Each structure stands twice: as structure tokens, then as C-alpha cells.
Image 1 (tube, rainbow, N blue to C red):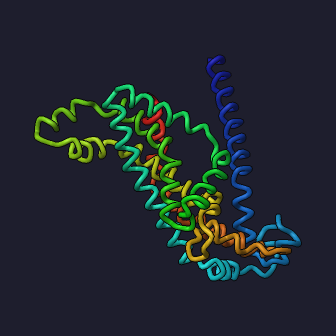
Image 2 (image 1 turned 45 degrees about the vertical axis):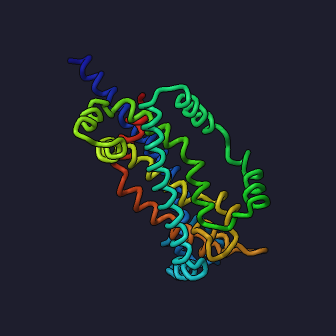
Image 3 (image 1 turned 60 degrees about the vertical axis):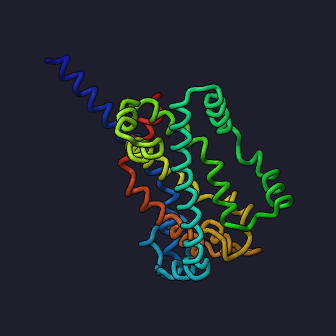
Length: 286
């Protein structure tokens, strides 16, 4: 009995310590976001005077920063641009990535193996290493920069390798070929078999890759800044750059603008969060 009691007490102490560590990590992780939220409700003088002070210690709390940010960044137009780019690139990556992964799994030949190996190897190449030649070729030689289609094309290409890798693992380990053979016997073509049998089975991994790719496209600043220069085509991350002046910046408006950019993608994350972990694990096991 004493040994069980000692063991039970030891386990409780370990659980309390683990919970305390997790709480500290959570607070540390959320602190910057909390400061952005608090400072977005302050006036500029309060932010400069005491950026780490809480709301109940200051006066002048208002939502004027959100109104100013909404108007100054032309939120509706920037939101439309971000939505078009994000949705288009995400749909293309999802459809093309699943089709390519399915072909590589079901056609196990040398070309498929080499293609898959090259795509996996390309994931280790940082974007910063190729961005200058990319801009030089697309801007100087082809002269097709400053178009949403160009940005969508680039987003699709850069995200294809990771998507194919995830879909490849899921199809190989969780989609039995017997289902496809039954579909062929019933008279389905290859395209019908893929979209009616295989594609619906990929729902967990598709949900995962949709949220990961959408977050990447929505929050990306570097690639759109190299491709887009027309103010009418700026995405939300680029539109927040208008808050920075040559010698000063309106920090309250900047914080409010950042929150306006984050809210839509947070809603998408909350809607699909149940499928993210399961999709990652299912796609990565094989």
C-alpha cells in the first residue's frame, strides 16, 4: 500500500510539474500576440510611453486604430486580392498534388521514382537562394511580374513538393487498390475512379494541406513583395507596409492592421483544426 501511495504521489507531482511547464510555455508563446491585441486598443502616446502596460492601467482606450487601419490599407480590396490568390493557389495545389501523388504511387516506374525523389529533394532548397534569379527571369526576361496569375503560379509550384509528399504517404498506406479494381470492373474510367473513389478517401490529408497551404499563401510577404507592385493588386500583408513612414510609424494602426490580417485565417484554422493532426500523422507514417 505504501509503495502504491508513494508511486501515486510521485505521479501527481510529475503531472503538476508538467502542467506548470506547459502553462509557462503557453504564456511565453502567446505573449507577443497578446501585446499586439492590447496595443491595438491604445493610443499612440500610450504605446510609446508604456508598451507593456495593461489596458486597465491607461486611459484613452478606443477602436479608432481598427477604423484607421481598415481605411488606410484599403482592407476590402486587399482582402479580395489575398482571397483570390489564396483560394486559387490552394485549389490548384490540392488537385494537382493529389493527382500527381496518385500517379506516382500507382505507376511505380523509374520516371515516377526519379520525379518523386527530385520533388522531395527540392524541399531543402530555401526560397531566398532562388528569389533573385526568379525575379530576373520573370521580370527582366519574360516581363510577366505584377500579375495575380504569376503569383498564383509561383505559390502553386513552390508548395507542390510538400503536398505531393504528404498525399503520396497517405495514398500508399491508406487507399487499398482493391477499391480501384472494383471501380474499373463497374466500368469507371481512370479519371472517374480517382475523383469518385480515391479523392474522397484523402479528406484528412486534404484538410491538413488546405490549412497549411492557405496559411502559407495568406501570410506570405516576401514572394508577393517581389511579384506585385501595383497598389490595386497588393495582398493584406503587403498593405500593412503602408503604415510605416520614413521617420515614424503609427504603432497602434499597425497592430490593428496585423489583427485584421490574422482574423480570417484563424477562422479557417479553427474550422479545420480537428483534421490537421490526424492528416499529418496519416500522411507521414508510410
